[in-house]
Length: 200
Figure 1 (cartoon, rainbow, N blue to C red):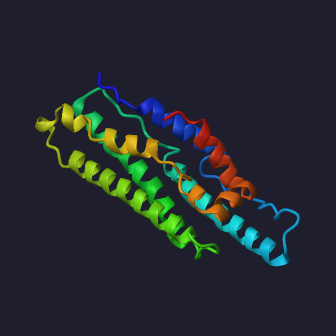
Figure 2 (figure 1 turned 180 degrees about the horizontal axis):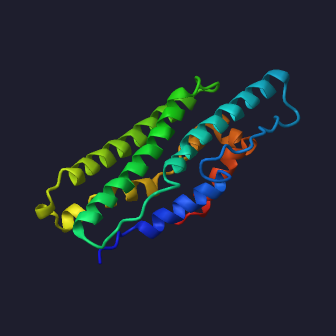
């Protein structure tokens, strides 16, 4: 029986992100918290704008799980079924990445310096994983039944491992305003807890 290596790690990531986003496919309740004391009106407005932008960013990258909520299982009962269901699984991954990319591309310009660079790098990362998942799916779909071998059945492993390794907020620390904004952005806080708790 063929078993997908890395599946358990991927499901841990998926389950945790679903919990962190208040359930896959559901819009989380978001109340961005106001800035702290001792700030001028302009500083409070900038902090609030940064928190709202960061929260929208986190909704976008967190929407990856929406396409994975109904991720199919691979059917190992025959090589042909394993290939077909592996292709369907990669389709779920691609759909989730497409949602995340759409959300990132729809974000307004960052109100703080460095935010747009963070978004651009996330788009590059997500697009790269998406392209490789799509290429793997095409290889699966084009394989003739008589040509299915172990390498064919392993096509889904790489994209799954890449998704499991995605760190959704790893570049916020390089932008002080965004690192601060996370504390005032509820969806980001939920993702931060999950990223910290998930074993790599």
